Length: 182
Image 1 (cartoon, helix red, strand yellow):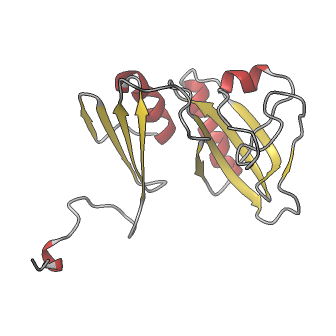
Image 2 (cartoon, one colour):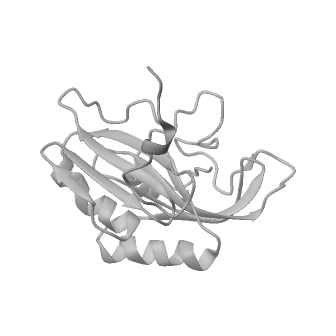
């Protein structure tokens, strides 16, 4: 069988030549929707029983939620992030989260993953941690510098060591002396 490439074009329009697709399991799509509407600043483009899709232009991502009866909070994912171009955009995201009643945790000029970053953290209804961040210096001399040490997460969330990055935002914000990064 020969494939005719002229007939095989995307049925979906988006503004870049490629975009990332992220699909996560959730215990309850309806419960998760308000968080992701706030995170992305828009509603879903498709909602079906046990499923929701966000087609986001900025950042370009096809993001889906899939309800899974066997879902276990935490899973194997460390965290998700949205990289922006300015601290002003980080602060705008933080304001959106706060206005929606979400707990936030901010880090200013934190060194992580050999970069200096400003960021805000937020956690969805299933315990997935999200950061909105800007890279201020892309070539820091060390992997990470924890401004606050001694909490349950002394190492960077992207550290290849024992840290799993699975603590929830509530633990981060209530624990004097914890820090996350990446």
